[in-house]
Length: 382
Image 1 (tube, rainbow, N blue to C red):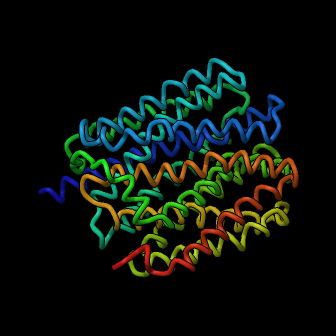
Image 2 (spheres, rainbow, N blue to C red):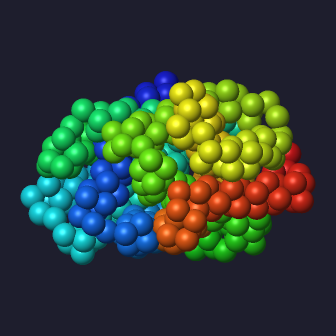
């Protein structure tokens, strides 16, 4: 009976992820495109994306205690509501700094949802199928991101419709969480030492989380702008982002299967190698008919897969009452990287134009590869 209840909770959490993914897939690309329409430079657009990371840094330390006190469904539903309201207000106002403040509020809500779902699914999964469950998690969210980016192509990018659609998706995400109110795993109050234990036991994993965050922050914040600076139209830029996200979603099931069968370090090495190879090639194939889509999809698969596999390593290390706090600490590491990813990527694009973004992604992937190779099996013990 308990297993059936947990399975129902997992399904509801995954459905919630689809809605939040669609909303985020609309929300992320429209901001750099609209700011570009307002005449902002790549560097200033990259600085604007800092708001997305600041929200995570604000709320993540509180999520572990909230889980023990209020339960996962209440916390995640709160995150969805917080994300929906400021997104709606972005539809009725504009301006660089007004949107910065509203984007910060949206990011706080999405951070609560993100850390909450990480902990929910990691806690509900057994070790033998953790990779599979987390791959479903990444597929549900990344697939939603890709669907949202594709849906964005159907809207007038200069209108308020994208913001209204994103706000609606964030609000509807509360429904499956409400259905699973009694089907979530239980969380005891997290220990005060959980954060320090994460740092002490898994320092390399923490550093890898920071590097993955740097790469993802740059990619999510600037990939549409990278395509425009490569000579593509705004609608083609949306489809480059869609392909990046779709590649990430489509490859997560085999990546999850591999991470359950093989040493997760080997899977990290494989994914980082793919990113190191694709990033220097992508700027030179942007006007080809096939290679651009293949390489963008492979880059998305590797970038998004690195996070999921690292999360599986985290789930092996931390269980019970410390799970929510440990997930929050890992997300903080990730977001410290993402905080600098978009500004660094924008500055590099100011210097090297479009290839500057790929330089940032390639260097981050190479450092992840180096860490996984040199650390050996010590960070994922049997």
